[in-house]
Image (cartoon, rainbow, N blue to C red; front, side):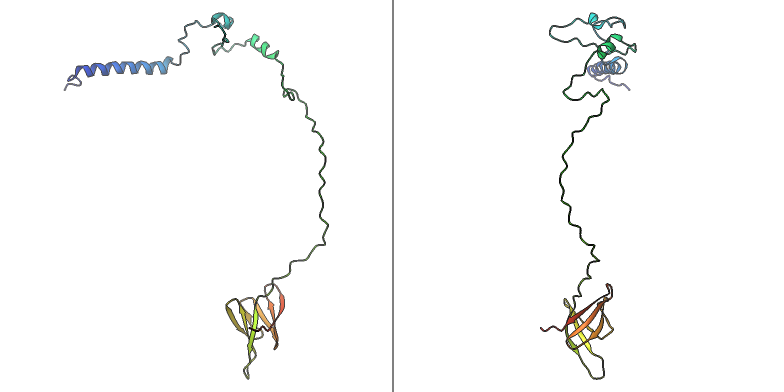
Length: 190
């Protein structure tokens, strides 16, 4: 079996591209980034940077970053001689900023009210609209709440909440068993 021998030109181009790709990968992994391939020689730790890099006209000289761990006393001295010149307080001094006094705002206090008791219980919303009176039976009343109609006697509980206490010809006395509230409901016509 012959691999790639059918087309010799394609094989040669593939080998050349493989060599170029290997060169790029090797440069990126082992020596890439351009830090070691400078055209100017690296400065010794004690020599000033300006002597190794010739300055260009109108441009500032920027020293290349180095991994030299020695302490540069000239850079340290230059940073100590700088003075902070801001237009507000000095952030390097430990002084408390004295706040300016602010005029107090007058707030009206509401008049003290006497403590009120609990809110009144909700009104009983039943309507008394009639009664039935058969001989030998106790009186029955007709109560309505919305579209619901209830028929009850004295002592009965209506709508699982209201108890009929007393029935008279013109009104009925109802007790709300949940809130212990009694209310007299008059006979309504209509």
